Length: 168
Image (tube, rainbow, N blue to C red; front, side):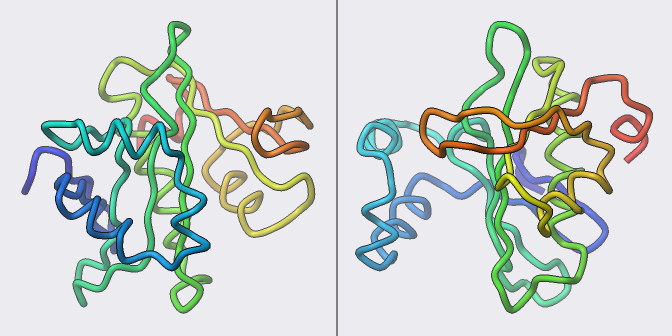
């Protein structure tokens, strides 16, 4: 197992190499590639090794070895120990509990590093699949906030020491 692999019941969260990361960006369609931050892309190209806090993970189904999604942190934990997660499961694989496994695994990973005290997530400001995932993972709903990039969103947080996060 690579250092930055996270295993769940059905999934492997695998940190890609820098070469794999850049190749996946090149393979994106023009619309998706335009959404990649130029600053982030410059940091990725300058990196000498993949960083789990900055470069994200491929979500691989352990049995079939199929990539079923991606996930990552929006950056390393800040000075207060807050880190934000994001995840996406390909439409063909949704509804199987994979997003829940990913969100739980990312929270556990963040807390086990000792750097994170709070794992945060944002969702669209209405009930949806992501709000159900975060509820299942014992995240607390904190209410609506204005995100500088995404506008109105709902904020969810899970604190270190939460029983569910420790025992997942």
